[in-house]
Amino acid sequence: MATRVIVFTISLVLVAFQAANADYYRPRPPVVPAPYVPKPWVPLPTPSPRPVNRPPVTPIQPAGSIARLFLDPHNAARSRLGLSPLVWDSKLATYATWWANQRRFDCAMSHSTGAYGENLFWGSGSSWAPGFAVQSWIVEGSSYDYNSNSCHGTGMCGHYTQIVWRDTKRLGCASVVCANGAGVFITCNYDPPGNYVGEKPY
Image (tube, rainbow, N blue to C red; front, top):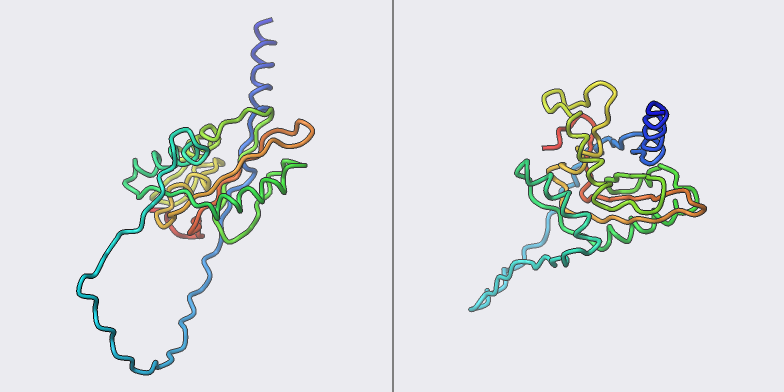
Protein backbone atom coordinates (compact mmCIF):
# COMPACT_ATOMS: atom_id res chain seq x y z
CA MET A 1 0.00 0.00 0.00
CA ALA A 2 2.81 2.41 0.93
CA THR A 3 4.51 1.70 -2.40
CA ARG A 4 1.31 2.60 -4.29
CA VAL A 5 1.01 5.90 -2.41
CA ILE A 6 4.64 6.79 -3.23
CA VAL A 7 4.23 5.90 -6.92
CA PHE A 8 0.96 7.87 -7.09
CA THR A 9 2.58 10.91 -5.42
CA ILE A 10 5.55 10.87 -7.81
CA SER A 11 3.21 10.57 -10.81
CA LEU A 12 1.11 13.47 -9.53
CA VAL A 13 4.19 15.69 -9.15
CA LEU A 14 5.38 14.86 -12.67
CA VAL A 15 1.95 15.69 -14.12
CA ALA A 16 1.57 18.83 -12.03
CA PHE A 17 4.70 20.62 -13.14
CA GLN A 18 6.65 20.91 -16.35
CA ALA A 19 9.42 23.37 -17.17
CA ALA A 20 10.06 24.63 -20.70
CA ASN A 21 11.07 21.92 -23.16
CA ALA A 22 14.15 23.83 -24.26
CA ASP A 23 16.07 26.88 -23.22
CA TYR A 24 15.87 29.85 -25.54
CA TYR A 25 19.19 31.04 -26.98
CA ARG A 26 19.83 33.50 -29.80
CA PRO A 27 22.85 34.47 -31.91
CA ARG A 28 23.95 38.07 -31.42
CA PRO A 29 23.50 39.97 -34.69
CA PRO A 30 26.73 41.29 -36.22
CA VAL A 31 27.53 44.93 -35.55
CA VAL A 32 27.50 46.92 -38.79
CA PRO A 33 28.96 50.40 -38.33
CA ALA A 34 26.85 53.19 -39.74
CA PRO A 35 28.51 55.13 -42.57
CA TYR A 36 30.07 58.42 -41.47
CA VAL A 37 28.03 61.41 -42.58
CA PRO A 38 29.49 64.82 -41.66
CA LYS A 39 26.99 67.11 -40.00
CA PRO A 40 26.86 70.87 -40.57
CA TRP A 41 28.29 72.92 -37.73
CA VAL A 42 25.62 74.30 -35.42
CA PRO A 43 26.50 76.69 -32.58
CA LEU A 44 25.81 75.29 -29.13
CA PRO A 45 22.76 76.76 -27.38
CA THR A 46 23.35 79.14 -24.50
CA PRO A 47 22.96 77.17 -21.27
CA SER A 48 20.13 78.03 -18.95
CA PRO A 49 21.31 80.09 -15.97
CA ARG A 50 19.61 77.61 -13.64
CA PRO A 51 19.87 74.13 -15.16
CA VAL A 52 17.54 71.56 -13.66
CA ASN A 53 18.78 67.98 -13.55
CA ARG A 54 16.14 65.56 -12.34
CA PRO A 55 16.86 61.83 -12.38
CA PRO A 56 14.25 59.71 -14.13
CA VAL A 57 11.57 58.44 -11.79
CA THR A 58 11.10 54.67 -11.69
CA PRO A 59 7.55 53.84 -10.62
CA ILE A 60 7.45 51.69 -7.50
CA GLN A 61 5.05 48.79 -7.85
CA PRO A 62 2.78 48.25 -4.83
CA ALA A 63 3.42 45.25 -2.58
CA GLY A 64 1.27 42.30 -3.55
CA SER A 65 0.75 43.52 -7.12
CA ILE A 66 1.26 41.06 -9.96
CA ALA A 67 4.33 43.05 -10.98
CA ARG A 68 5.93 42.68 -7.54
CA LEU A 69 5.08 38.97 -7.40
CA PHE A 70 7.21 38.51 -10.52
CA LEU A 71 9.83 41.19 -9.82
CA ASP A 72 10.77 40.32 -6.24
CA PRO A 73 12.11 36.78 -6.85
CA HIS A 74 13.88 37.96 -10.02
CA ASN A 75 15.60 40.78 -8.16
CA ALA A 76 16.46 38.60 -5.17
CA ALA A 77 18.38 36.27 -7.49
CA ARG A 78 20.12 39.22 -9.19
CA SER A 79 20.96 40.84 -5.85
CA ARG A 80 22.85 37.73 -4.73
CA LEU A 81 25.21 38.31 -7.67
CA GLY A 82 25.46 42.08 -7.17
CA LEU A 83 23.46 42.81 -10.34
CA SER A 84 21.17 45.81 -10.73
CA PRO A 85 17.44 45.14 -10.16
CA LEU A 86 14.98 44.82 -13.01
CA VAL A 87 12.09 47.27 -13.34
CA TRP A 88 8.56 46.44 -14.46
CA ASP A 89 7.82 47.55 -18.01
CA SER A 90 4.21 47.90 -19.16
CA LYS A 91 5.18 47.44 -22.82
CA LEU A 92 6.79 44.09 -22.03
CA ALA A 93 3.83 43.11 -19.85
CA THR A 94 1.48 43.88 -22.77
CA TYR A 95 3.62 41.74 -25.06
CA ALA A 96 3.65 38.90 -22.51
CA THR A 97 -0.14 39.14 -22.16
CA TRP A 98 -0.52 38.97 -25.94
CA TRP A 99 1.59 35.81 -26.13
CA ALA A 100 -0.12 34.20 -23.12
CA ASN A 101 -3.47 34.77 -24.84
CA GLN A 102 -2.12 33.08 -28.00
CA ARG A 103 -1.48 30.00 -25.84
CA ARG A 104 -4.82 30.15 -23.99
CA PHE A 105 -6.37 27.36 -26.06
CA ASP A 106 -3.45 24.89 -26.15
CA CYS A 107 -1.03 25.81 -23.33
CA ALA A 108 1.76 24.84 -25.77
CA MET A 109 5.30 25.48 -24.51
CA SER A 110 6.37 27.37 -27.62
CA HIS A 111 8.34 30.60 -27.66
CA SER A 112 7.10 33.77 -29.34
CA THR A 113 10.58 34.25 -30.93
CA GLY A 114 10.16 38.02 -30.68
CA ALA A 115 12.71 40.72 -29.95
CA TYR A 116 12.78 40.01 -26.20
CA GLY A 117 14.27 37.37 -23.96
CA GLU A 118 11.62 34.91 -22.81
CA ASN A 119 11.04 32.31 -20.08
CA LEU A 120 8.04 29.98 -20.12
CA PHE A 121 6.30 27.90 -17.46
CA TRP A 122 3.45 25.40 -17.53
CA GLY A 123 1.70 23.68 -14.65
CA SER A 124 -1.46 21.56 -14.51
CA GLY A 125 -4.41 22.83 -12.53
CA SER A 126 -5.28 26.50 -12.18
CA SER A 127 -3.53 27.89 -9.12
CA TRP A 128 0.15 28.35 -9.92
CA ALA A 129 1.61 31.50 -8.38
CA PRO A 130 4.07 33.81 -10.19
CA GLY A 131 6.71 33.25 -7.51
CA PHE A 132 6.62 29.48 -8.01
CA ALA A 133 7.18 29.85 -11.76
CA VAL A 134 10.15 32.19 -11.20
CA GLN A 135 11.64 29.87 -8.55
CA SER A 136 11.38 26.96 -10.99
CA TRP A 137 13.69 28.92 -13.28
CA ILE A 138 16.02 30.12 -10.52
CA VAL A 139 16.73 26.58 -9.25
CA GLU A 140 18.38 25.92 -12.61
CA GLY A 141 21.28 27.94 -11.21
CA SER A 142 22.50 24.74 -9.56
CA SER A 143 22.98 23.29 -13.06
CA TYR A 144 24.93 26.30 -14.37
CA ASP A 145 28.74 26.18 -14.49
CA TYR A 146 30.12 29.70 -14.86
CA ASN A 147 33.66 28.66 -15.84
CA SER A 148 32.51 26.61 -18.83
CA ASN A 149 29.40 28.78 -19.36
CA SER A 150 27.31 25.64 -19.76
CA CYS A 151 24.74 23.47 -18.00
CA HIS A 152 25.85 20.39 -16.06
CA GLY A 153 24.93 17.12 -17.76
CA THR A 154 21.42 17.09 -19.16
CA GLY A 155 20.13 19.86 -16.87
CA MET A 156 18.71 23.12 -18.20
CA CYS A 157 20.02 26.51 -17.08
CA GLY A 158 18.97 28.97 -19.79
CA HIS A 159 15.98 30.27 -17.83
CA TYR A 160 18.32 31.06 -14.94
CA THR A 161 20.95 32.76 -17.12
CA GLN A 162 18.27 35.00 -18.65
CA ILE A 163 17.16 36.06 -15.17
CA VAL A 164 20.73 37.00 -14.19
CA TRP A 165 21.80 38.46 -17.55
CA ARG A 166 23.75 41.59 -16.60
CA ASP A 167 22.51 43.80 -19.45
CA THR A 168 18.81 43.06 -18.93
CA LYS A 169 17.00 46.02 -17.33
CA ARG A 170 13.25 45.55 -17.83
CA LEU A 171 10.73 42.78 -17.16
CA GLY A 172 7.11 42.10 -18.11
CA CYS A 173 5.17 38.91 -17.41
CA ALA A 174 1.70 37.44 -17.78
CA SER A 175 -0.24 34.37 -16.70
CA VAL A 176 -3.29 32.71 -18.22
CA VAL A 177 -5.46 29.75 -17.22
CA CYS A 178 -5.82 27.69 -20.38
CA ALA A 179 -9.10 26.41 -21.78
CA ASN A 180 -10.53 22.97 -21.05
CA GLY A 181 -8.46 22.49 -17.90
CA ALA A 182 -5.18 22.44 -19.83
CA GLY A 183 -3.32 24.16 -16.99
CA VAL A 184 -1.61 27.50 -16.40
CA PHE A 185 0.74 29.15 -18.90
CA ILE A 186 3.14 31.82 -17.62
CA THR A 187 5.54 33.86 -19.70
CA CYS A 188 8.11 36.51 -18.76
CA ASN A 189 9.85 38.78 -21.27
CA TYR A 190 13.17 40.56 -20.79
CA ASP A 191 14.69 43.64 -22.40
CA PRO A 192 17.44 43.87 -23.49
CA PRO A 193 17.35 40.11 -24.11
CA GLY A 194 20.01 37.74 -22.83
CA ASN A 195 21.26 34.23 -23.61
CA TYR A 196 23.45 35.20 -26.54
CA VAL A 197 25.34 32.15 -27.75
CA GLY A 198 28.89 31.98 -26.41
CA GLU A 199 28.48 34.88 -23.95
CA LYS A 200 28.45 34.70 -20.15
CA PRO A 201 25.49 36.24 -18.33
CA TYR A 202 27.55 38.33 -15.89
